[in-house]
Image (cartoon, rainbow, N blue to C red; front, side):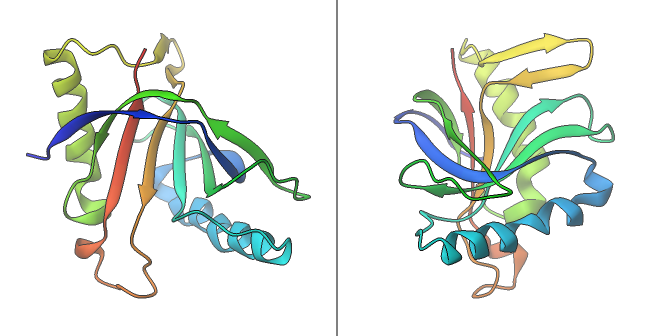
Length: 162
């Protein structure tokens, strides 16, 4: 089982693209990552880490979901064709599972269960079209160009708490 912790975090700015996507076509989501880094480089901006996938609305793993693929930056940046926003400040439930993307499904399930056992209230709204999250993120901390073995990738999962 992955270790979980609660961390207080400051607001985190990002540049990215919002979309509705399905896991079966995740390559379309990932295709935005190099475009965002390229646009930041062209604008003379320095990214503050690996890509962040923000899950805004989820129903089931097979249903379309609302997601923002983004890259963290130091301050708001206006770049044509991209959005800018901020992950809210607050307390987050955080996990850093071993095993890269292949460990995510199990880690999310364990985090949800752990939050309930610990009586932590997630910043969500449950609606007919799915769970709407104020902040649920996966940030990839390992550059796949330098480490091609997915099982060695470091990922951080974070859920905003109420």
